[in-house]
Each structure stands twice: as structure tokens, then as C-alpha cells.
Image 1 (tube, rainbow, N blue to C red):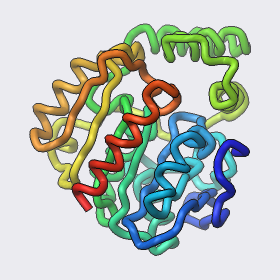
Image 2: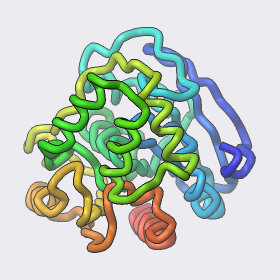
Image 3: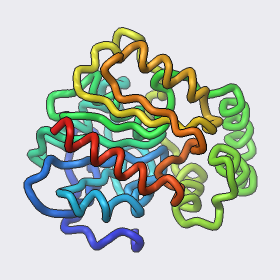
Length: 268
């Protein structure tokens, strides 16, 4: 978090499922951008993106309830739609409407889940190599994930994270943050699964989807093709030299920021 600018506000928002930690950056009347983190990555995973987004208007980063971070999960989720209702509670209490959701990896799944089950406050979604939306996890992820969960040792999780990123990232604080989250936090949430075709077709808000062609956590080409088929009006792009963690790589940062801001301004 020290790599982020100082937040304008730090908020603990009460919901029916617990207290959600939210950080607000930036000022102005531009439509708000809400950043949804990757699995166990917390608000801090977007430290490198916040300054550019906040220069254009208000930005809210959320520690996803039910995952590692400063949010406090006190009541269980009954089902997957319950997770969307929880985020809708947060947006309602913050009096936010016309929100542009931006999510990487599992955050992209949450953005789609919101657009499907509680879209009333959502103006658009931008997803960065979203997992389990239009393609299931690869067999390698399931095998590797099972092995690491059984052994639950730092060195195994480190190898898993570097493999999923396609490079050695363990010298970076954001990678070590994710490692700490998955090693020490025990989530009690409904298992993340792909929505059905009809649910995806039901999405009415504008969609920007960027996939990393080198992503190993799923088949990114098949995921992009299926999304184009189900949502023909969506902006879908595959970045040929990018892996799964689009928002963490310095090489991809500027084009991700430019692509998202251009999209948000166009659909606002």
C-alpha cells in the first residue's frame, strides 16, 4: 500500500455479510472506477494503476469480502449471487451509481458476476484475463492447485505463482502479498465456476475483455472466442505477448491503462 498514493478516504462499509474495506483515491465528477482485485491480492495489487486512474477521476479499490485483506467476513454467502448482492450493498452505502468495474483474474469473474446478478449500479465492466468466465481452469491449474493445497509449503506456492505468471515474480511485493494471502487465509465462499451461456448473454452493460495469449491458467484463445460468440458487441482483445497477470507486468501497464480509460470514456 505504500506504493499507492495516499488515499483520500479509508472506509469500512457494513453489509449483510460483514465489513468491506474500501480505499478512495482521486477527485472530480467523472464516473467512478471500482477496482476488484485478483484472488487474495487485496487493493494493494493495483498500486501501479491507481495513480493514472485517479488522475482522471474518483477510484475505489475494494478488499473483496471473503478473501485476504482488511475486510471482515462475518456471515456466510448462501450462493454465488449472494456475492454480487454483497458488492451491491457496498456500492449502495457509498451512494455510487454508474460505476465502471475493472477486475483482473478473479476480479474479472466478480465483475461479470455483478453484471449478471446485480447490474443496477454498473455502467460497464473491464476484465483483464478473467478466470472461469468463458473458460474453465486448465487441468494444470487444478493439478497444481491440489498439490500446493495438500503440501501447503511456501516453496510450492512460490513455484505455482511463478508458473502461473510465466516468469519469476517473487522479488516483487505484490507477488509476496498474494503468497501471504493464499498461504494463511482460509476462505469460506462458494466455489468459483463459469456462468452458463444464458447468464453471459444476459449481460447488458458494455464489456471490455483483454486476454493474455500466454496465459496458462486457462485457454485464453478459446475464452476470447467464446466471449465474442456470446457477447458480439463486447470489445474483446488478445494481447499476444502477455501472460495471465496483465495488471502486474510493467511492460503491459501503460497499454492496459490507456485501453481501459479509452473504453470507460467512450461508454460513459
